Length: 171
Image (cartoon, rainbow, N blue to C red; front, side, top):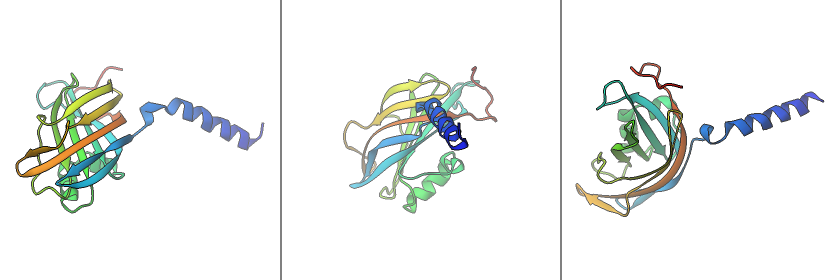
């Protein structure tokens, strides 16, 4: 077998094992005050739970462009980027029981950002210590705080482990 054939076989085997757990994809839209954005990239990472000491929450970031991992983890930076029109994103925090704690659509068309679990519907298709996948949607256009928005996006992403977290999930 030639070196090229071995390399091709190795790539094929790697692709078979990469599967959905390695995927970081999103498909959907976020519309803010009449301006649409296509969400195509998904990131997920764990953080210490805000409400349950000793547990981990997962944060999902769905964006219209590729982000450096450090940017996806920095909510303040994402908001600043959104204000400048450099990103449109949906940031959702899930507790260990897969309940939505907050959802924040970010888009340059907003005059103020709305962060609330009241407007999001969550339909999980996978949720464990390694991967999160499913659908977030608003169920129609929301109108609050002089803002109008809607989103409907399906996604799949591996969860990046946080070595600084107080609790590390069992493997």
